[in-house]
Image 1 (spheres, rainbow, N blue to C red):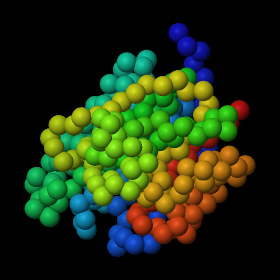
Image 2: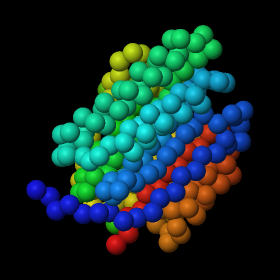
Image 3: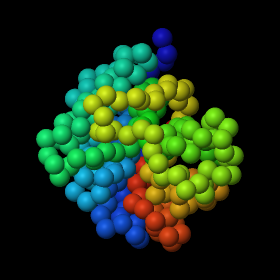
Amino acid sequence: MSNKKYIYGRYAVKTDIGKVRMNNEDRAAALTNARGNILLVVCDGMGGQNKGDLASQIAVEVITQAFQEKDKFRGKFFTKRWVANVIRQANSEIFRQASHNQKYQGMGTTITMVLIVNDYMVVAQAGDSRAYSYRNRNLEQITEDQTYVQYLYRIGEITKEEIDTHPKRHVLMNALGIYPSLDLEIRVRPYLGDTILVCSDGLYNNVAQKDLLSIMKGTDTPDQKVNELVSLANKNGGSDNIAVVIWEAQE
């Protein structure tokens, strides 16, 4: 049995429309429960006006409500299964609403979710929003983008350098709500008090990795950091909606 500990910390959440889009389809949330578990989630909706924002909203609401109603997580296997089930519920609800209303056809959303329970975290991914772990002055991407260019890179068709400029770099291989069933990437990792950053592509496409690291290294509060990240993304073009969540454990 691992030694159960209540994790203290603080978090901040911010979404922004950016400089180019007509509406904000990004949604994000961070919350803790009475047992000190932490839920972080970012969804980047797609499908244009009246669609993407609804899809991302449904996903965040279904997941945060289920987390609030959950009594406790019993071990890694069951926690991982709960994460899979709750994201599949969100997928079904988005798909159901899209099927029943012509206006919402084709709506979907990415999801990146981190659930921290004691000494481990469950990281779930569909699409190209991202989670990073910051520890020992090092920023590590802990999700893999589910995009066509990432697939091409993995099979050796393109180089790492070509990913950022490839004409199909925005094509997703996975998202919530598009199909009745869902292929989900879920990993369990040790949690060692890392600071966690979860964000949509509107952040990392407009802010270089070295600048992300530089802000994460700073001594500002999570609130200040999310504001700095969003304003830097906008300063660098704000080519998309921006969603940022930061969790920082405290001694």
